[in-house]
Picture 1 (tube, rainbow, N blue to C red):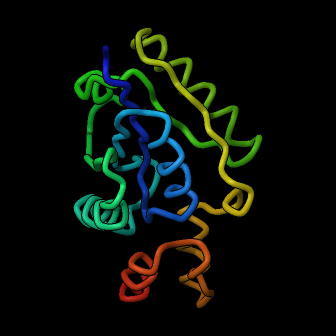
Picture 2 (picture 1 turned 45 degrees about the vertical axis):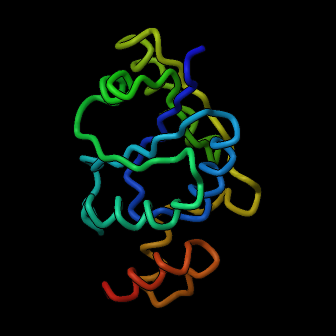
Length: 159
């Protein structure tokens, strides 16, 4: 029987409680969940990829079937190299759907063997994004409800 592997791609700059909630839930659905950290070419990174890998790996270490990797290729190529059958994407709002739907269609065109699965966050995480966390923190706000303590500590050292 084939091992069911999902890739959860993103910049995770930083990883939030919303990401972690989705990862925990996905870890119960799949044999393995690979967190694929990449650099979004449309955004300036706040943390290096190595920092994001290290921090995410530390935060997720207690979930046995989750591993954290980086990639700089097409997502479908990375998924195929990892023997993944599913690309996992989170949808926080209706506004996310149009963009994610386009990506899903393009990925399906590039590799018809890889499915995209959309998951919605738990209600308390629906408005959390990495960009908002960085903005709140840069303006002196409290982000402790949105990110793990290790992320909050690292982010505060950056300001």
